Amino acid sequence: MKLTNSKLVKKQADLHQWYHQNSKITGADQYRGLSEFSIVPPQKDYRFAEQLNLDFPEECSDISLLDSMLQRRSVRKFSGEPVGLSALSTLLYYSHGVKNRIGSLHSRSYASAGGRYSSEVYILVKNVEGMKPGVYHYDGVQHKLDVIHHNPVNDSFLINEQEMGNYSFLICIGSYFDGMTQKYGERGYRYCLFDVGQICQNVYLLSTALEIGCCAIGGFYDDELNRALGLDGHKESSILVMAVGRQG
Image 1: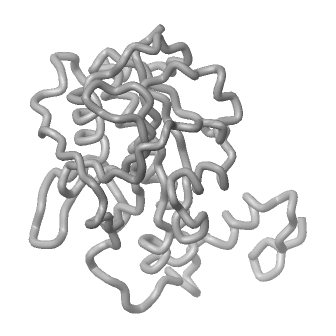
Image 2: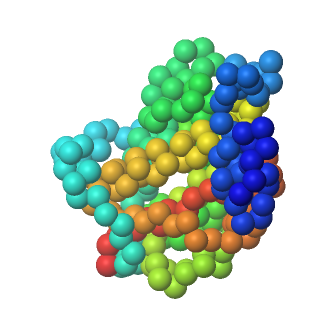
Image 3: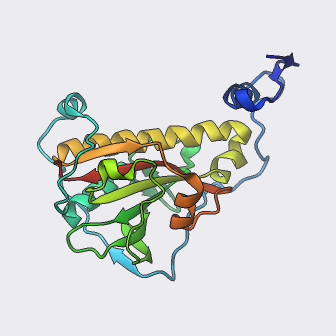
């Protein structure tokens, strides 16, 4: 592999190494973000959408954090029984919701570089008590769901959809890249992935505490999922899917 000025020459077979080398911070260039950017991170705006208010949850369970970590596992077989709306609300609030507010700024239940919170969470509902099937966006600031549509869920974007077909809902995590890269340049893409990973772990631990199963899914057709969520695939794109349901 050829190096030029400590940067990798781009090759199709080595895209991961090309990106990693070109997003390194050196003494010469520091961060390559914009000199000016909004202090308040950009947020999705669904103000004209139908909205479903969620009750703020109480304590999740009596299980300790250590026990949740030790019992955590990926569940790939679901019973098809519905999950309650309260469980979904708890899962969303503690994995991605807002903890504290200072004016227009806020902090969430996971760490994010510069408090940029680049991730957006979407829910594809198949069988949740008190909810119509369809696609929803989670507004973590207001703790509510924005209805994108009530069409039946089509999960053909999953490469092995038959393996976990009896889930109750899918959590689809997308990243709004500009929210990070405006401040941190190309290195901001790394931080977007950090955000998604932390939300994923939160969902795993909370699912364990709620005695429901979940499984992270990296195998999906990106463009098909982006279309299902209404994402352009460039400024914002799907990164991870998590299936959630009653264990079979």
